[in-house]
Amino acid sequence: QQPVQSPQAVILREGEDAVINCSSSKALYSVHWYRQKHGEAPVFLMILLKGGEQKGHEKISASFNEKKQQSSLYLTASQLSYSGTYFCGTEGREFGNEKLTFGTGTRLTIIP
Amino acid sequence: GAVVSQHPSWVICKSGTSVKIECRSLDFQATTMFWYRQFPKQSLMLMATSNEGSKATYEQGVEKDKFLINHASLTLSTLTVTSAHPEDSSFYICSARDYVGQGRGSPLHFGNGTRLTVT
Image (cartoon, rainbow over all chains, first blue to last red; front, side, top):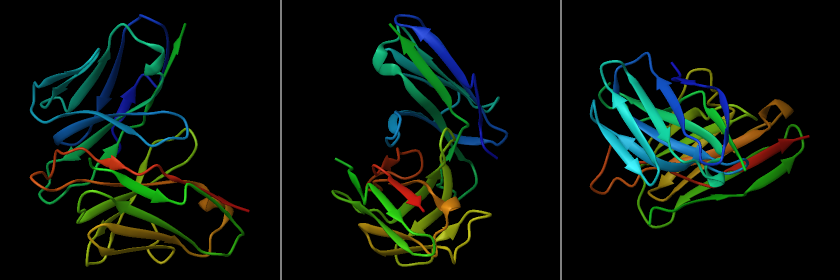
């Protein structure tokens, strides 16, 4: 089951904030966040492993609600370089399962 | 560190021919590599998990006889698209984890992808 992301797309002016949500129907071991520019490979942003964990990377941070099987990515004071498609990736709790299932994606466009 | 190299970056082939894509971990050993496929404006869909020295594990709906995966060494996995058809045209991306001291919960390192066009 592919995690569902919302919104599907968002357009921001430079300096505005955005929140991207990722929701899974399965119990999660971890949530990853990646950003992909057009025609390129995804770039790793961060991993969240524990329920309630929050992490930050410059002006990009994320939270993980293990009980709700949800994660959110927060982008503050967005920059033009933040444009791209954001994917969450989830690892399930099943023993021996190391694969990463990517979410539906959120296309972020930052305009000057 | 943790660089994954994928070759070729793009390939155009005629319908019915086979195409091989290589994925190498340059500065770490990868006992497991993952092959994804991405159609335009869609998410990355896992095709198979490549295990060094053993058979690959394919996701449901992926034809193992059409997408041959070989993981003969700790640094090289190959994906061969056999008898390619236009509907196989897509962006294929490999990825791997650096397992030294890590396992689940560690980031995936991606190759730059291969854009396959079948005419």
